[in-house]
Amino acid sequence: MTRFFAAAAAATLALVPAAGIAQGAPNGYYAATPVTAPAKASLVTRSTLWKCGAGTCTAAKANARDGIVCELVAREVGKLSAFRANGTEFDTAALEKCNAKAH
Image (cartoon, rainbow, N blue to C red):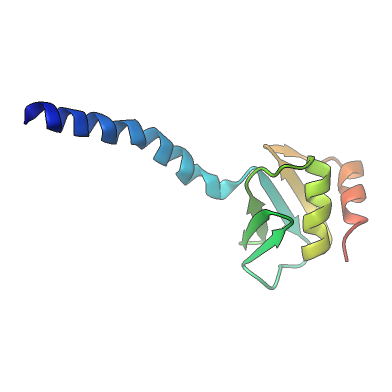
């Protein structure tokens, strides 16, 4: 019986780090800051789910280049004042290219 509880505790502890990583996901791999707040709290570009709130939309890593992901979200939410991918802000030239696709 003691072995069962020890195994159950070990299995539970093995899952704790994974839960911690999942909890960090709301910050997202991508962060897009639209000039005008989006009307919806969430949107989808291709297969990427974006969650919007507090002036920023965030999403997990997509299967496309960062520039393409920026263009896709700009098409949906309009011009962006900032875009970040994996913690790195787009420079002025990259953001202008992205915003060229905005509606």
